[in-house]
Image (cartoon, rainbow, N blue to C red):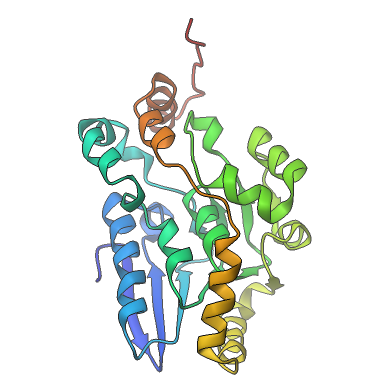
Length: 255
């Protein structure tokens, strides 16, 4: 399922999902979120697919987040519907429900939605140009995925630091923290991804799927309701408005 900005193709047993929206630095639209979820499910149900890869085009950005220019109006207009289908509103939990491994290669800036993709993937490679950040609180957004998955990945102290400071870290720091599995020179990222795919495919697919299931069963539940309600909060509206207007947000604590 292709939509503008997202491509899907299967070659030699590998389903490749490619984020390709360079004019917006690969920011995800609502259509791209849904297509990503559908593509993951399509690969899962395709008997000819053994592994799934996620990459992005360009040298600057992997995925910097969702397209905030869409604003919160679209969310609040159909809040009831989104709450009713909370778990299906985003593709991220689909990553962990698949039996097939998802291997992600990060080529550049990775934050917000991009960082969640990293956290939900099974294996992650990163270019030495990659940069990582948790910027949600700068925009007044209450993301349910990072606070649950990031501490399990890098530890509570480091997760708190990244969430509450929005500090950017480079690829080497991300590898030391355990956020990514391997860092390679930028020019070698494609080759390293192909080599990783070939290495993983030497393992038994059914046993591999059982390992993945056991790992993910130990992970805590991710709540969606707070996020969907928070998307129409005054802070979220102000954060996204400030982003569009290219100014610092004016935070006012509610009485």
